[in-house]
Length: 283
Ligand SMILES: NC(=O)c1ccc[n+]([C@@H]2O[C@H](COP(=O)([O-])OP(=O)(O)OC[C@H]3O[C@@H](n4cnc5c(N)ncnc54)[C@H](OP(=O)(O)O)[C@@H]3O)[C@@H](O)[C@H]2O)c1
Image 1 (cartoon, rainbow, N blue to C red):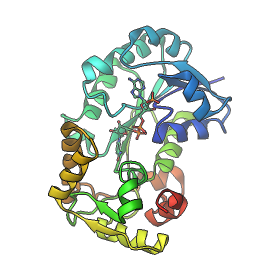
Image 2 (image 1 turned 180 degrees about the horizontal axis):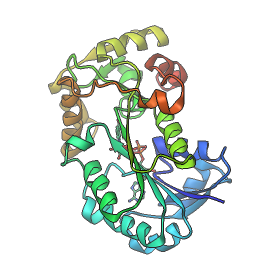
Image 3 (image 1 turned 90 degrees about the vertical axis):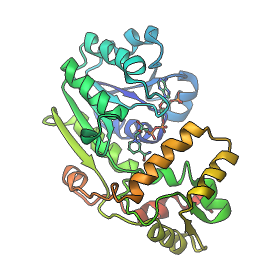
């Protein structure tokens, strides 16, 4: 039976990848830092194997007899050479046959982002791979921005009037599972976006209509920095977020592709559907 190892299994995308893989005929293993708490999150049908990208002692057991790897770069690990490459070397040594890597929209044209370095390193190792270059996650709105929306009725991000082609992580996970289970996706890269690009003014209107309470959009960079600082976030993290929202402000996050629709044979989830499904996060 196909053995699939999922990294980032307790996170936004990884949890959904595990949930969908459990519906398939395969052996699902979650590579996690804390197997006890991961088991509680993921349930008893998943093998939770100790794994830490920064601890090479965990690699041999985790990659043993693994055919396929779902690779997710934890957001805090930005030094690819030191923090991601050693695990990839171990995957190669263990004979992993295929990697599905969650990458970033535009990674092919931006050699500075860690995702681009990881793509190149996987190719250099010669491990057959599929790169899922994802747009901005809808689920950032019920994680990073949840409190602002819930308590102050405000979408606070310095994205100006730029449009974003948001994608739902449930669609990303569905594509990941398809590319892991079906043949023919090796040496391919897909750019996964939703089917519409919206400004945050439009997103705020959708929130207002679905939640039945006023949600406004505030694009002030000054307010954003002030608020993030007062929430205790580090300046490094805030700068990364500003860079991401500046990309959107400049219109660079608005590209729409048909990859998600073609791979799933259905329309991607819309932001209205997402807000309806996640309503309880903001009420
Ligand atoms: N957010 C977006 O809009 C967006 C768009 C495109 C691409 N991406 C990319 O998507 C990825 C983030 O995905 P996500 O939101 O699903 O992640 P997430 O929810 O932040 O979860 C991160 C996962 O990594 C695990 N992890 C953290 N440090 C680890 C370590 N040292 N060793 C092993 N596992 C570790 C965490 O496990 P624990 O339970 O142990 O903490 C958790 O399962 C990033 O690479 C990001 O750049 C994001």
